Image (cartoon, rainbow, N blue to C red; front, side, top):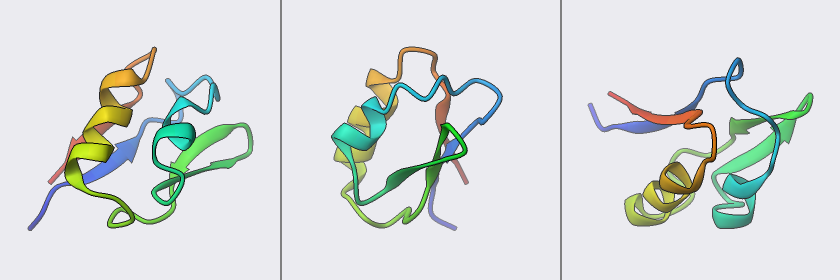
Length: 62
C-alpha cells in the first residue's frame, strides 16, 4: 500500500499553507485542512507541504 498524506485535525490551525502549496491535494473544511485528493500532486510537492506546516499537523500514513 502506498503512503498517503494525512492531516491531524486536532493539530491543524487552519493557516492554509498546505493549500497554498498543494491546492489539488488539500482543502479547507470547518476551519481545518483536509486531504481532498491524496494523488493530486507529486510526492515531492506533498512533502513540501508537510515540511512547511508550522504545527506539524500533516504526516504520511501507510
